[in-house]
Length: 593
Image (cartoon, rainbow, N blue to C red; front, side, top):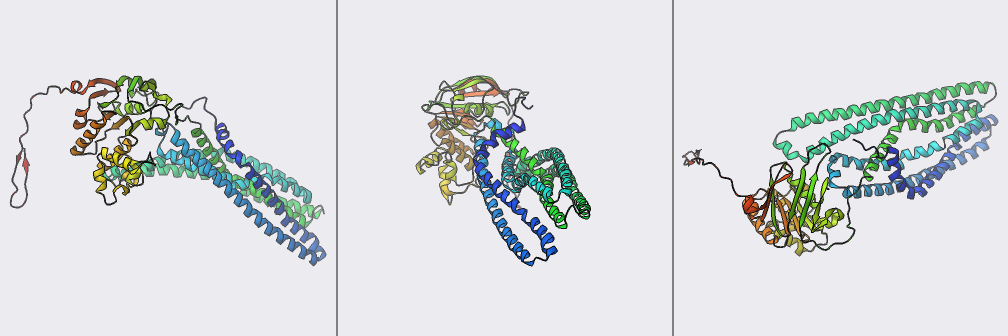
């Protein structure tokens, strides 16, 4: 449900776009000045025609014709130079808008809390960059030129009043009709464009899911099902586009019809005025030429209203994102390196106002140093609890403390420096292995990178590769085996030697030998680091000093591992008997139980 206090579209438009345009006002003034001269020069051709008909032809003034031709050619050359100048100014405007909006959008996405980013599909965030392009193109493209031409439409109307008063009132009536037509077009096309955009977002969300889950789609032969879903959503976007196009074309054709009617009316009334000797033939022709300069921009306005509607919607979407609350990036004061004691005081967290709490009233204190295993069934709240400890989620109720200090006061940079994190999905970034290990520390030395890789038991595997630490990882790390990808993610978390390590299923892609090697490294680190592991791996869990077992968002049991993990007595079972059948001469064999 939308907040009643949320700003309306016009308010979001003004709040972020006005400060952006303010520094560009000198450039816009230059565009306006050049457009003024260009529109003044546009009068030259109708005046040329008027003079040719009324003076050159009537009086056979060949010398006058020569002078007029030389003058009009000079005007054409000057007009070309001015239009090129205006285009270059608008290119500068486009560049500055593109840099300003895109940079602000990237900074905003990086500054938003994790819940805000998770609350919308990836296609929504991708669409925001297309919205930034829409804002740029509208403020610096043909629509910007059209806006300046509309300002000077009244100028041509006034000139028609001077040289052809009998047809002036025709243009006044047509002008009023076009304004009403453009207003109605704005209402209907904006609504249709908004509906089309929602359907396009729905379609693009499916594309994002298809690309992200391409391995699953292939493995489970989901191609036909995904194709049917794609066709359904593509049909919706096509229908939305057709409905919007139908609305827009109706008004465009009405505008074109009005232009023809205006030309017919002007010619008919002008002919009567010529017969009454109230207008000359040259005056009528010049008035018709000037009417094209007046009605042309109005007709374009009706057709370009979709662009203006998209601009308004794009600016509104960007404005609403820009107005969202950022998470703190810097702490108010620099605190010393914590020892690693974590306290959760009655912490509750809900993903939505109507859902059950994912974490419900957790009270827990983890002493500095040692390894703690967090266990529980799927959906018990383990990963949510880890994100609360990391400060990625803010509790709905309660507080999380590090060494007695509420983590809400710390910026993301400090928290990331103090707490290393290995998520379930070990996403790597395009680049080399070294780039990924030292991603958060671009100035890290080779020795520091190697040390982190060694602790993660990845160094021996990396140096055996033909390119070693310079090996490209591919998109998301897809060019590396899952086990090595996971070790690199662990090494990345160990960079900077954070006093707290939170690892979510860090051995899910490791074999038993690699698990045991990692366990030994973690035991060594646990002497002076707090290590929290979400894991069910026996080698890892058995090495932990304490265990927390969660169930439905609550702590079911917690304490020393030897006490909590005491196995329950099992009923005696007859072990299955397996007999190995020797391979026969044909090379076949079988196992029977």
